[in-house]
Image (cartoon, rainbow, N blue to C red):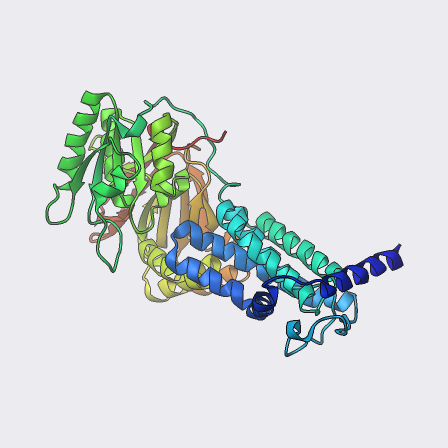
Length: 493
């Protein structure tokens, strides 16, 4: 059987070598050289990361990770396990042959493995970009036979290894589609074709941009042409609080919904108004990070628009904090923190796109713990010295001291994480982070609670919630209003 397969492999190679392929001799040798050491794929990934949005950067990162796993597998296992001579070049026209011939084992093809791994990894995040890359990946794989450096069987084996590497990466790091927020509890919301009945408050000051700021009205009307748009922020916009109140009143008159285009701070303010008026909320991501929108599964204006037009919505939890038994509560959709957590997030976000979330989290924790001083306070009546106290609205995934994102926005819990002060706390926490076991460190405390009381806060302490920083009172109580806000989002078919 093995000899038969070898015979068929060699015969196919000679048939490809003997056949004329119009236009191929100008393209395929150059293409195969451009893919040496993965340079072609790294260039495509870099271009996508620079010019695309967050989904494109994520697809590029997955493609590169899949390529790296495929390349490591081919070079450490594949070529060392099967020693196969390269094809003889007698049957290959000289004009096709490479100037520099490879000397490693012919089996399997590393170029084919890298090409298929990259394209498959990208497709897991963005199927249309993956389909666009498929012909390029197939051409790179075929070019290895065309130029005479591999048998067809080498290429097929490499392609299979590449696809397997992409699946392995997906198993280790699931895609956002695999970890999409569960579509429950479903909520009633009006379908608004074209956005008719939707009143959107668009914050002109949201987001960090170096070029001209976009026309927020055009952004909304590009996906929801019949929506009403009110601008806030900037030189010619209303104050945010007034714009939201007026928009909510108008939405109630129309029997529609409140919309918001902006970052997490703007969305937080809109959620508080929508919650108070009993209106559904449509979130169009328009800030720097857009944590709530992305955790909700809304990454583009088009995705938000489709949900609005079809009336697809869910109920989500809203967390709140207040400084006494009766004062008016402040709400947060994402996070609340005291201590060094805001600085930790700033450093982590600055480095995450360059070195990855885990190394960035370690770097951020070390920098914060090196420079910060612990606070002494009481948590549920117990006196503690802490560097930082983090409270998330619903459970976050990620390293213990650097939570990243949520899977469920209606789980009914506060995600409480505390980095304690004390003797050698810095060293012990960093050691646990480097070993990948931060949750087992006694320096880190974690709990999932429905209510939390913080007291004896030192004068001058500040707190942060959803990107806003305000002075902290001496005593605080945190709890939740479960499934209290209706938000538009696409539901799985």
